Structures are given as C-alpha cells and as structure tokens.
Length: 151
Image (cartoon, rainbow, N blue to C red):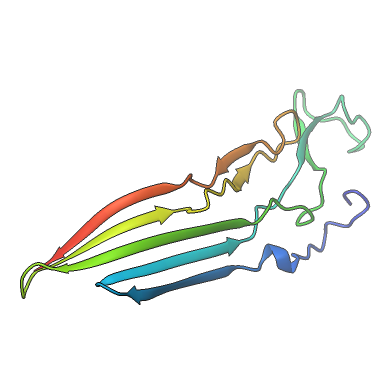
C-alpha cells in the first residue's frame, strides 16, 4: 500500500486517457488556404520513487540488505497525480501561384505551437531535491517558411 491505497489493482482515470485531436483546412480567396491542427493530450503521470537504504528503513524488509544496496519505494500511488494537459496549436497559411500552365508554386508559412505553451512532457520521478524538475518541455513557438514547386 502507498498512502493507504492498495497498489495491486491500478485503475487509470479517464483524464489520463482522453485525447482530442482536430485538424482542418479552409480555402480562402486569391488562392490562399488556411489550416490548423489542435491537440489536447493528457499530462505525464507523476511518480515519486524513493531509493531507500537499510539505514533509513531498518525494519522494512525484516532482513538486512546487501552492503551498500538500496531498494525503491513508491511514495505516490500510481495514476493518482498528473502533470497539466498538453495543449498545442499548429497553423499554416498557404499561397498557390500558377507560374505556367504546367508549373505551380505552393508557398507555406507555418507556425508550430502557436500559443507558445510550455507544457511539461517529462519530469524527474526520483524523490529528492530534483523531484518533479522538468526534463523535457514542449518545443517553443517556431515559424517556418517552405515551398513546393510542382511541374
């Protein structure tokens, strides 16, 4: 048991499974096209694993550990705590230009992570001074200009 909860049967709550992904595009006047992708994903499960030594928990196992050995103790019940949800919006504006009858240029302006969300994607789960320190966050807002020439 962890914090009075049995960890033999772990039930994952709906908020840890629910995902929303939307995408679409809209033709605009003058050969422009606007498109967007929106993602709303569950945050990472927060865990706390303590590397305990025999000196810190002498009677836990009922026997001594090997010299210098540690064992891992979960402090937080699995699937009971989560990071904030990851929300991301990517946008694209496209302009089509007919250069000749057989040649067409597609110019794109992309904005990734348009709202500049800095959601945490991975954290340190080892209990201690760096517990819950982010290891990875969502990439920052990024602009990209690209093109495609079809002939």
